[in-house]
Every structure is written in C-alpha cells, then in structure tokens.
Amino acid sequence: MSRIAALDKYISDDIRRHGNRLSELEKKITNVYQEFTATEALDDDTLFANEDDEEEESAFVMYVFCLAICRTRS
Image 1 (cartoon, rainbow, N blue to C red):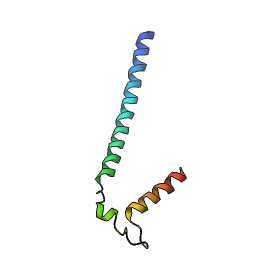
Image 2 (tube, one colour):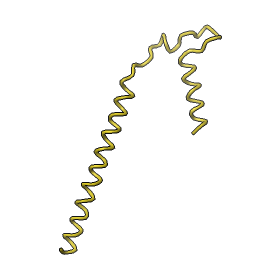
Image 3 (cartoon, rainbow, N blue to C red):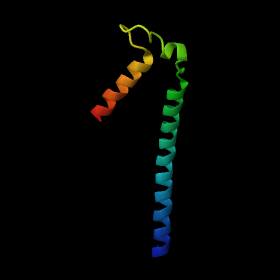
C-alpha cells in the first residue's frame, strides 16, 4: 500500500469515526433541548403570585434566589 493510499484510508476512517461521534452528540443535544422546551412556561400570574404577601415568596423571587445559589457554587 502506498503512502498516499494509507493516508487516504487513515483520513477516511477518521472522518467516519468522528462523524459518527458528532451524530451521536447531535442526537443527545437535540433530545435534551426537546426535554427542556417540553415543559410549560409559567404564566405571569403564577410567576408573580403572592407579591403583596411578605410571608410567601413568588416563583420569580425563588427562581432568582436559586440562580444566585447555583452561581456561587460554580
């Protein structure tokens, strides 16, 4: 086998191998994206409920609080 043929085979095999890996990663990313976008978004009434009640926090406030905690951990 000539050096050119060996190089061509090496490149072709590498492209197929990485192409398969990229295809699998694309499928995983697509599945995760669909999973995250499948959940319903909170409407404004739910998000800002209990704004006037100091005892209970709204979903928005709790979300911001959770984000702050997550950011400090990373």
